[in-house]
Image (cartoon, rainbow, N blue to C red; front, side, top):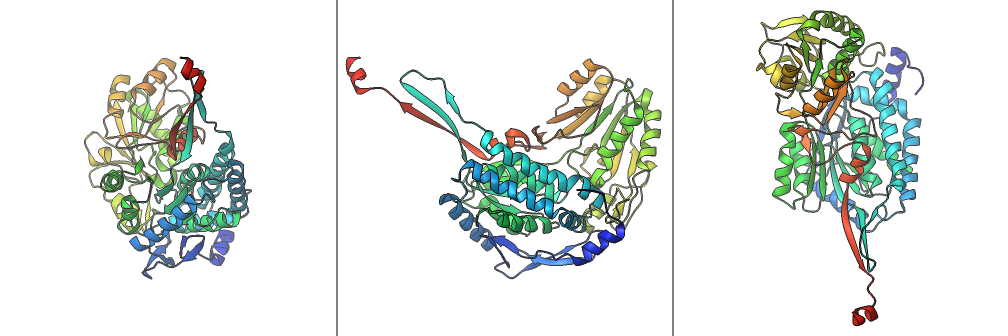
Length: 499
């Protein structure tokens, strides 16, 4: 994306932006049928950016019909795989041309720093879509073993009409994680962005139409959970819902499915992820940098955030000294200032929730202050393993430090949570690393680093962190397809007569 601009240049771009404000259904922008709107605000200033269409059940029904029509007539679902690939590649090129606009739009709408939007969110979004586009005509179906008189074909088919329910912490990137494989497989999609962060999804839908993705295939419905999310989950003509968000909200979708048409449901939800540092870890300064990134990147608003530092006593003091030093290198302030690494929390209500974890009487090693939508990177040394800050997903820039005496105690504590999304372990002992990675009950375990893998590796969790499918990798395509067996009998009538 080139070099970052100055703060003043980003402010100038922001002042000239035109915000998309209507739902995108059937290939065009439309107001909500009710005429209702919702305010989308800049979390860093509290100022209203735009009034966006607030959709309801009637808009869901209309969008489902448009999506169903598009799917059944095959304008996308039966298009040659190479033609779908070409359309998605055109979309990535259009997004590259408009990358800076998308980055500023994302920062304004979510409170994310322009540093991250320019360097991570927008480039990774484009890369994700390009990767899935290129995979379309490279996934082969199978012929199963059978007798000489039979052919057994195992083929993938698109699911149909798919509802994609997005979180607010990575609006663009989570959009890409879902629309990439869902569109690549040939589905028609209805995107429900989080009501706090609607703007970039609407802009991408507009670019998708320009790229040649047919009308009715890509629909976006802004609105609340009860007004859009639940009607999508309960609609009898929606074949699947893919949800990313809180565990509390995600629990509802299997119920909606059970009480309607038993649609397929995939869930990627919360995490309370451990970072284990053993006393034989090497390059402690590098370890500290990874711990800080894992805890404070995106203001801790990350389901894979390393929110629990589990450290062996022998290395604790040295590690914390370096962690605090690295955390002080993450300046907080105006998200449009590229020098800042910590922006605003996404909303006033979420800011208040995060602040509720900054209780008096805690041993604060760093930070602990909050004002005007911003919370300082905070490190708490905690002895009570049942404390609220240890058990609950905070989704903010708060790192809890827990001290252990041994490897076995560290693994036990890491697994002492209802979640199982991600974990990391830092050690120079290869046997410990492998034993630990196998013993930790989480969908992704990194060794000597913080991360989630990359676009080629499946991402998802165990336990209350989700089930039903995986984002990223070829496995992401699998969750947006159905497997069909086609059994061909080649027996000749004359052969049967002889037999």
